[in-house]
Length: 378
Image 1 (cartoon, rainbow, N blue to C red):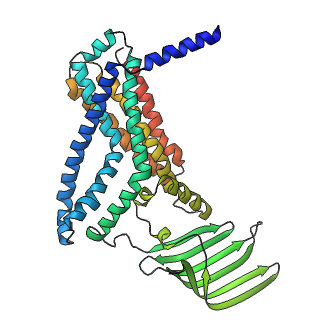
Image 2: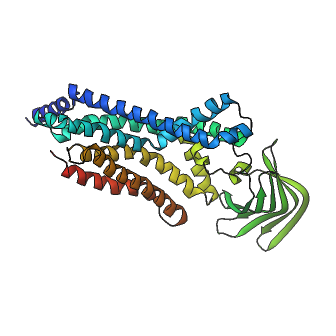
Image 3: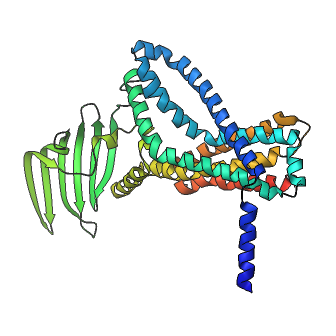
């Protein structure tokens, strides 16, 4: 008997979630308004960006074909996914407010559909957009970002990233540590280079010191010049000197000259592999890449939160009209984006866990969304 009741309950649930005419209408409105807002705002962004950079493009004689295909065709997907949750929110506020003004929301609720059931097509549309954002961010945007950065290096701000790096400490293997006093990415040369190896008890086993180390791009190895190698075995110490020696390490010159946007050039698997490498090296950059990893999960989830806030705010016909709903909603969405930036900085500069830093804004704003949902007209 219980099995029969369970089957009937399941069938009832599936029937209630089956798409109806009103569901298709809301999905069509949602996605249509979202892509319209996306095209409109990105067109404005491209116009302003071109107005700002056109002097640089002309000064560097950038071909217009490269400007269009290498820069703006890669610029648009990056910024579209970056601000997609905001575009979702604007779309939801706009078309839901119009539905409320035209008393369509009242008609839907009077037809017997609950407010909770009315949210189903909204969340289906949000799911499509969230999956789209996750896929682009992890598998498409990294390649387009590389092409865009390469264009910027050639025609907008060449060589600005190549600055000397100082006091480099890395763990390259288990119990093996590397130090450089300074490194020049232009000459691929490091100064005052050391490799220290310790045993399981933390005692020094060997130490290689060199006043200069050079990256050999042919063999992909570091060459230490005028080195001194100290090997310690118990109370005995053997010192070896030489003109040069090749070293095989898990670091390369690119690890010392990262662009601020480098985290966005890695695909999902590349980012995870690089995080594992940074954990092995004990790098100070680890937090930056962990923040990027958790941001890629938290960012698409924000679509659902802002959708719920948008529907809850705009489903009621208020005296202030659409403008009032949009104003309140934009204040909430911009505060969310600002909070997200503050949380990431607290993690980088402080002791806040990167995962917690990226999810705190979502956790706080989902509480706000649920409160607004409770206050929405049913």
